[in-house]
Image 1 (cartoon, protein in one colour):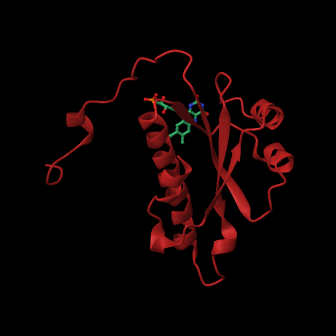
Image 2 (image 1 turned 180 degrees about the horizontal axis):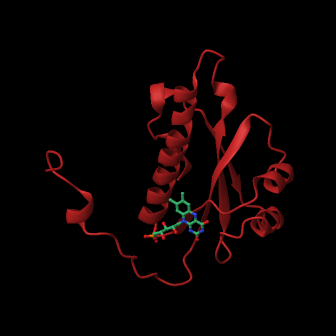
Length: 143
Ligand SMILES: Cc1cc2nc3c(=O)[nH]c(=O)nc-3n(C[C@H](O)[C@H](O)[C@H](O)COP(=O)(O)O)c2cc1C
């Protein structure tokens, strides 16, 4: 899963990301208590970060903005790999970055972007609905 994650594309191949895989049960419990968006008791929590130290002073705001896209693409690869292995995984944006940063001794140059809860699913969830393709996809432009 982490190999799939870091195989993701990134703008200019900058790979301005960093990840913490929290597996230790005590740490997991602590991190989870600052992440109300985590449902259930996952076996692990991935903390996906943007690594600002990968940028130089000459990198403008437009370059830095792409960093979050790259982290999101890496997270999507992690989710797909988990699914392919029969695991369940869910991205979580509802968390308190400050306390989690302290708990994990994270350096200042890492910006916490997303958590991912992963583990063996307790039940097989029903697929959630999606908007109709006709509504969201246009071929050859809008008319
Ligand atoms: C950026 C982002 C943040 C999310 N944050 C949470 C969250 O905090 N808690 C949660 O349970 N799900 C979270 N989700 C999962 C969505 O709720 C879920 O993907 C959506 O409801 C569709 O369900 P499905 O992925 O199971 O098809 C998040 C998804 C994204 C993309």
